[in-house]
Amino acid sequence: MIVAVGAVAIIAGLAGCASEASATPEATIDVTATPSLTTPATAVTDKQSCEEFGDVSTILQNASADLHSQRMTQQEYNGWLQLASRVLGRIPTRGEGDVSNTI
View: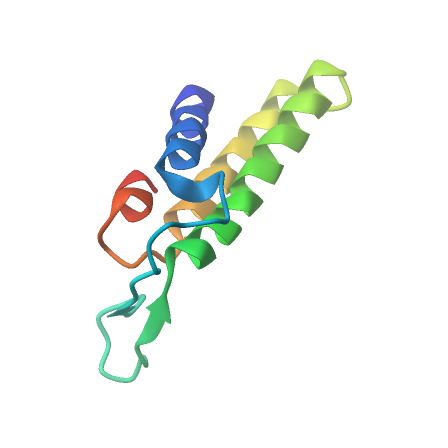
């Protein structure tokens, strides 16, 4: 599981999350989190997706450091990996482009 999440971190960095600067303006598309008539649409940018992806990276880095320093057990580490996967699945994306496709 960590290999898959780690691979996403590397690819997201290559897709544009590693750099705040962009040569082209950020495009936005209206998306909704769930198909509901009562949920308002929100505009999501690649920058916002990258910022929220930072939470996943932080969870992974802290959990890995704690496991390797023996401050946490493998079972607790697995729980943190599951949390990182859930957070990754909830990151809003604009639905197209390198960052959205990678996340």
